[in-house]
Image 1: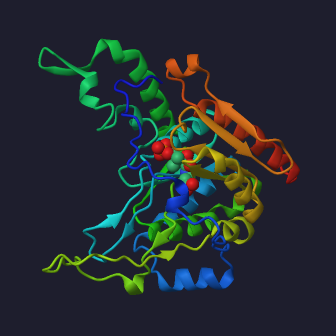
Image 2: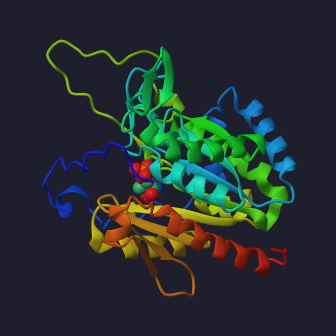
Length: 345
Ligand code: PAZ
């Protein structure tokens, strides 16, 4: 769908070479094992709302017990630096990939659990968000009444109808997170809630998840104070355990799992995506570059050549979403996964 106002291009803040920034000879942080899972979840408390949220998710899953259900994760997680949080480390993601993909999943007959960063873009309302497409710009006034500007009627009606159908048919469950800890607890609990669906459950992990965090026992309670004399703030962050293999093997056995890999350096995208597939043994990694993520992605999967999915310049100019090409390709693979798992498509 065509955007009313275009987003600014991605900014580059530095011209540094990657060799200067990251030492790639350091071995990768290993995937989490059972003890890492206990350590993390026993020592970093679940959010207070988790039980209620999961009850809602269980009801949604049981309502859709004969359907395909996709869990879409979307937007960036934060890393709080204080318990009563004033400052946190954030991530660039606005949730465009997740919100747009969710719409195409809905159009293709899926029920969608949308685990998203609070206040990031949502399916359907993303077309008229507060920042790029302010909804007020689509309005007009006539005889003291607020109306949709005639030139946007058709487009808005189409979005509205899809939104209302999703609501009426109970096809979309919106679940928010903010911090990395909330995200991890919710993801684990949701995975268990989705288990009854077996191969009909699909995980589409498009959220940009922090790699480093401050463990609960090291987070100061109050706002970090600046000291006289201009002391530096030195942060000591732990690596976030790599739970994808726990998800694949323990939390969601039987489900189809798709992860995303984001890079900024095109020369390492494919090798990093392949590495992720080998490490976690799931079904598909979708690679994308920060700079070109809205016009091309690459599918990396076991026993198959890599597949680039690209918008043509004409499609791009027409405002076609790349997700309208990604989701049918995902759907095909999910159907094959259900068949191979002995389920009926
Ligand atoms: O939110 P957005 O549409 O601007 O960006 C989407 C994305 C690049 C965060 C997503 O496609 C992605 O690659 N997620 C995984 C990021 C990662 O490697 O952790």
